[in-house]
Image (tube, rainbow, N blue to C red; front, top):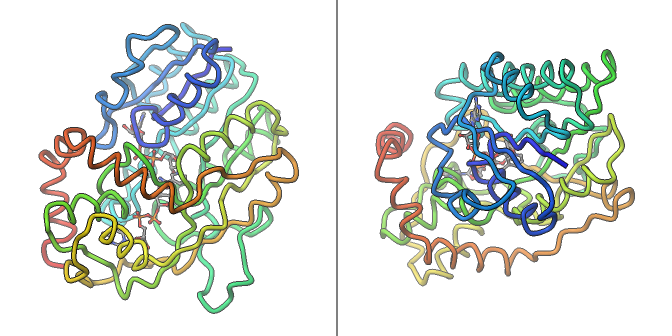
Length: 339
Ligand code: NAD
Ligand code: DAU
């Protein structure tokens, strides 16, 4: 089995590569990654020289390059993690989100049609469903929930999902889609809530909480997401969407306070800042379909996952300190400087 993993130098893609290395050492893995600000070769250091692994630097939206890779490598399966993934950046500059998330997905789909694959899996997000109100805790996103996007990021991800469905129905391409809730764990870029708060707390810098910090996200440890995708590749039904989430809804402010207490830092570091434009209130996945159909259940409880994550950032300071010394500084200034 040869799997092309796009976006494998990013947070979830790299964790997926590590997971698959352990679970299926006999698989050949090829990572295609553009190495944007979010991709990092250091993350892949432990697998780079290992057997059955190849890294190719390239852009999924570069059709010629993608066709060349399919021609040379003939992957059996494609798992597409490659994306612009940060909502705040999409509010600042939507164009690159359409280029990578929509046109890039289309180039991959066309390559799959042209060269043939056993499966194309699209890694999507619960954000395509929009948000839920805080006063209706009985409501959850199911696979039947209509798409209703809020940010340029989520709109681009929804567009890609619709393209996947269209290629499945029109051309019979063997596609599956997963829509996961918020991930956390090792190697997450420190622009996202949890690693940003850990990095700032360790530097005794203010922790910028948007609005009142009451927005709710449904947090899943990254390895549980990887296990779900592996299961979908093995047993999933072509044409099917699978929601992935662990019923672990938490308010942002409670996450931030938990991080502070784990690091033994004072809550006085919390700083309430201007809210994100169009900020989604609550995400909550109903994972009963993937549980019923494929037997998937998350294995990591939030308390264990957050402790492991905080420990990882403490033990791997070089990894994230390198990151926040470069482009990140000007991003941080633009995003938080006058907020
Ligand atoms: P990330 O930003 O950490 O990593 C994205 C990776 O894609 C980087 O390595 C980057 O270099 C690469 N990339 C970007 N543009 C590319 C291009 N044009 N060609 C090739 N490579 C390119 O993102 P992540 O958090 O790991 O998310 C991975 C996927 O999972 C995304 O599709 C995202 O929408 C989805 N997702 C993320 C979450 C989450 O909580 N992080 C939850 C659900 C779904
Ligand atoms: O739900 C899945 C999605 O989760 C993925 O599709 C996205 O790729 C991923 O980035 C994530 O999106 P969010 O917008 O939910 O994640 P983020 O970490 O950016 O923010 C989480 C919450 O924390 C959100 O309500 C905004 C808030 N926040 C975030 C940052 C970066 C703050 O209050 N302060 C901050 O500095």
